[in-house]
Length: 388
Image (cartoon, rainbow, N blue to C red; front, side, top):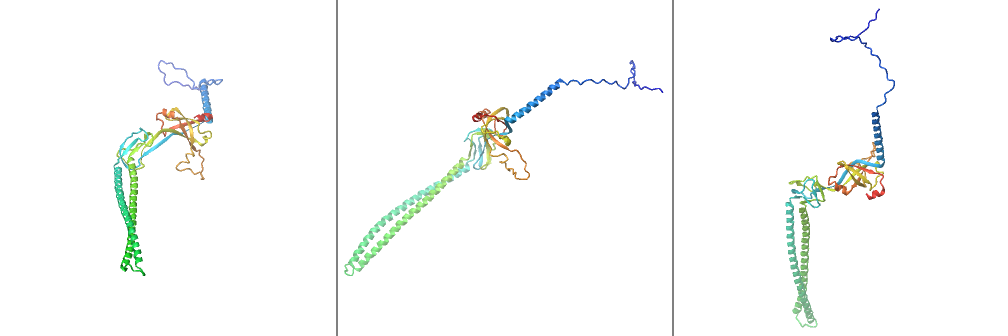
C-alpha cells in the first residue's frame, strides 16, 4: 500500500509567478542558546540609584527622628480684640474700612446721641431745681436763727423781770407778816402774782428758744437731704454724660480692622460685636504629641515654616507649655473611667514666640489662623537656648 503525502498548494497562483514547491507544515526546531544573556547595564544603574535613594531617605528619617522633633499641627495665633458698643443706638457714621490700621483711641463709629443728650439736659435741670431748694432752705435756716436769737434775748429779759419780781415778793413778804403789817394783803398778793407771772413768762421764752433751735435743726436736715439728692443727681449726670460719650465707639487697642459688620443705619445693642482688631504681635501654637515633649525645654530655638511662605523660614523659641492637653480644655473632656477605654496619644499646645524683626519684615502678611510647621533641634547647647 502506498503512502500519500499531504502538500499545501495555493488555491490561486497569479500569472507570471512560478508555482513554488510544496512546503511542509512542520518547521525545523531552533537551536537553544547555550548560556543566558548578561543583564542590561542601564537596569543595574537604575536599581542601584533606587537603592541608594532608599538608603538615603531611610537614613535621613532615622537621623531626623533622633535629633529633631517636628509637627505640622501648628498655627499662627495672636490677640484678636472684639469691638462692641456699650449702649443701644442707631449708627450715624462709620469711620473705618476693611483691613484698615487704627491706633488706640481712634473713633471707629458714632451713634445718634439725641436720646442721651436729652437725658443729660433733664438731669441738669433737676440739679438746678435742687440747688434753688438749697438756697431756700438756707434762707429759712437764717430766719429760724434770727427767731432763736430774739427768743434768747427775750429769755434774758424775762429772767431779769423774774429776778425783780422775786425780790419784790421777798420784800412784801417781810413787810406783811404776823408781827408787822406794813403793806396790805392785796399788795402782798400782787407781788406774788407778779412773781408767778414772771416765772411762767421765762419758761415760755425758753420754750420759744427751744422751738426756734428745733426749727433750725429741721431746716438744716431738709437742706442736707436736698444736698444728698443733688449728689445723687450729679452721679446720674456723670453716668448720663458717660453714656453720651459712649456714642463714639473707639478702638481699644492698636491694630488692623477685621470682621467689620457695622454699617450706617444699624440698630445696635450693648455687647454686640461690630468689628475685631488684630494686633501685629503674633506667635505660633504648635500641638506636639505627648511622646515628643521629653526633649523640649523652654528657650529652645525653633524653625517655623508657614504654609503661605514655605521658602521663608522663621526663627522662634519655645516660650511655654500649656497646663493641659487640648482634649482637657475641650467642650466635652473625655472621661476615661469607662469600660471602653482606648488609649490615644494626646497633644500639648506649645507657645512659640517669633523674633520681632521677622514679624516686621513680613509687613502684616503673618496673621492669626495660618498653618505652619514647627521643627526643634534637640541637641542644642545651653548657651544657645539662653541667648535665644
